[in-house]
Image 1 (cartoon, rainbow, N blue to C red):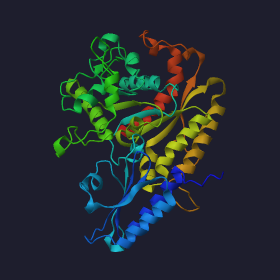
Image 2: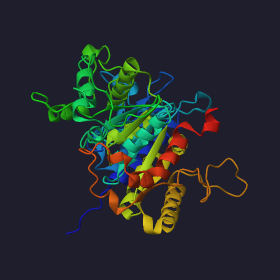
Image 3: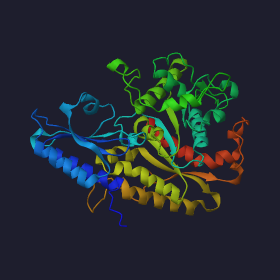
Image 4: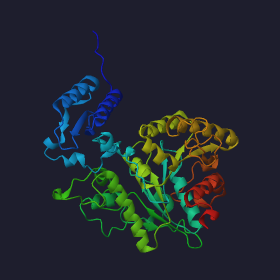
Length: 452
């Protein structure tokens, strides 16, 4: 039996975008919608107020069916004015504008609306994130990201800064046990802010604590916002986690209970801002906010990297999982020049678990592969004499591909950071993380010369 050819997800999406682009180039405003099953729908509007020509609708419908099936909706072309609530699509909080309207050239607006469960936040890159907010992220877990977060926080505090650590690893929280004594863990955590703010009752939550474990001489402070509150009878974490990621529908059609909008990205931003404000009220506004993000391609990581921070430290080891994972991640931005230009300068790779016995060789190989990855995805293709192209050379020590490094020694195995309060003061900890904390500090707050 001959199996008929089938259009796959990736090919269908490329075809749908080509159809949408063609319509916008003929003066039609287009919203390309992808539903939960990956099926495409085009929502059309003529910006002049005239009806969208029937012939144009039929042409788009037939092209979608021919080039995108089975990833095409039952009604692949819709007219916005015919919808019951067109604003729910045309003015959706999470709509992504791919091309602005240009009446002088006869070009309509082209927009994209992702109706998936996860993955949509990767393309919502914010142009103006808060400064000195840093996401620490690893595509794969087990690379020492959370430990590095705590060590970096203490190092910054020693320089006199007020530092807030926010545990965004909601599925596998752990920063609080490294940075706080048991009795210091606050009653509530980030997951409580997400749940309570959804119904307008987040005011008064105690969700941050100052660390005495990481107390330093001078004016520096380390505060921690854990993922969840202190374990105790009657406190349930998992039911809240189940409700943390959802979008919140507007209340009575008049707007969201959650400040900033109803989508998850705005909810998470509000939760981080809530923690920052609590530290400000109880002490002073944090100079630096470190976001310990969960691993993988989850929307928590997407929001942290694209919307909440102006610096992202990308942890990895020199293996295929690291490079393949980051290649997949960078592909989310590669196809859009604005996203590429906005995000790439905020990134910096971190070589974790660098073997002490062959450090120079290992870091050279790590840098080479990182440079190749950026060159194939986020750097510009530079020709001779093209001085405006963003394509840092291999040896540029300040480029995104130039790794900060954390040295691995066998002494790090079995470090009991949860029960041994002095774990961070061990000599081998300082030796392993010295290069990383110095480089990260310069990246985040600059050198003393920069500050002056």
